[in-house]
Image (cartoon, rainbow, N blue to C red; front, side):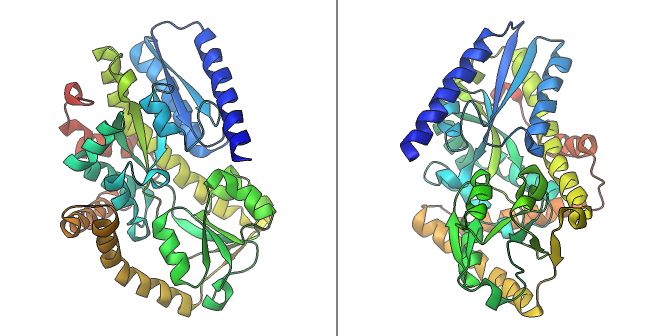
Length: 374
């Protein structure tokens, strides 16, 4: 089955690439790849970014988005390394050996409260972390910033409000942070791509899913789950916008500047789209026939106890399993950055222009585009 699926991806990838090459292009066209489908709100942000490229460059740089066609979510890192795609959303937890430093902060996902702050903290951390930038370089990628999903909730087929409800059920995990939480709550963690959750839920392979409320619509999950538990399950910190280093080198200096100047606004648009979508879907839950539940005090207390212990666990596992040096200091720095960005974004309306301006001012304005990717 896996071999057939991979063969199908490769046939689709070849067809998509030939179609792209057949297009009349004036200037340099950037192939933007995502493992999510065209209806996903993050993909819609990428499509906006493709338009901005043409507008900012006067048509000299254009973009085309390939959602779930040119490369699958797990193929994107290798595809960027080999130059099959130009810019792509890389999901770090699927590649722990290749991205140990980036995955270190992804393990703090449950500590994050809002996605504008989480994306800012993660982006600032990685761009100012020598080991992080070195591992990106080793993978043939130019790091352009982290995105972050809207806060996660429990989406389930049956109501889940107590520890007893969670005991023994199968829950899809978005990464090691959620796997630890799921197991601590007495449930069974299942690791599959988010794009496969719909089928797994419909077939009974999963009982529940950790994801944002917005995925009830942008991934059509409201068809297969009718309950959501409104408890704080963090913000996904394990994905970044990376450019193929091989193809970055072929861009003109002017084209590189266009891409780099727009990067903070791509991150902001992606984050804002997901935030707005989650808010809209939350208001439509009755129409979707999805019931929103509040967790019991017992479940909230168990979650709080888990978080009190988890920072130490993350540090110990990072040193033991991933060889992360100075893990305690790095953890303290990242937690401090999360607090800093929560203050910077507190009360900010869902406006991608204002958020992009903030990312530009606090992070990207301090970088030299001529040194990026070297």
